[in-house]
Length: 206
Image 1 (cartoon, helix red, strand yellow):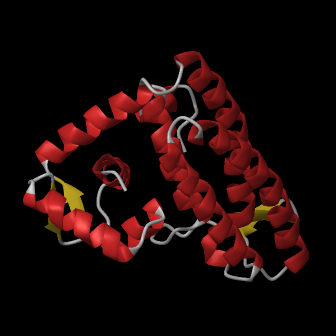
Image 2 (image 1 turned 180 degrees about the vertical axis):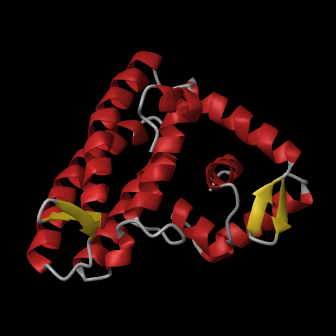
C-alpha cells in the first residue's frame, strides 16, 4: 500500500478510524495501522476525536498526490468516463430517493420497507447500475490501481443489501452503497480537476 493512497483516502473522507480506512483501502488493519503510525510520525496525519485526519502538511501532500494521478490518465479519457458516470449518477440518485420515499395514493411517504416486491425491484435496478459502474471503474483501474477497491466495496454493500441488511443502501456512518458512491464521486471530481461547488452549479453534486 502506497502512503499516497491513504492520504488521498483521508482527504476524501475528512476523518476516519483505522477499520474504516482498512475497508476503504481493501488492506488489512495491521497494514493500515502501521502506515498510520508512520504518517503520524511524519506529521502528515494526526489523531482526532472522530478518528485520524490530515494535518496541514498532509493536506498538501494529498493534493500533490491527486494532482499526480491526473497525469496518469489522458484528460480526454477522464472526461469521457466522467460523462458516463454523470449519466449513471443521475439514475442512482433517483433510485436512492425511491428507496427512501415512495408514492402511495398520490402522496410521497417514507418507505417503511414493508413491501418486499417494491424493494426487490429497486435492488434489481441497483444490480444493473452496479454492473455499469464496475465497467467504468475497471477502465480507471488500468491507470490507477487503487480504484479497484471501490468495486470490492460496492460488491460487499450489494451483498449485504440482498441479504436483508437494508441500511447498506444509504446509511451514512457505514460502508453503505451511497457512502462508497459519494466517495467515488469525490475521487472522480478530483481526477476531472473540478470542484464539488462547480459540480453543484452543473446539477451534478450528490
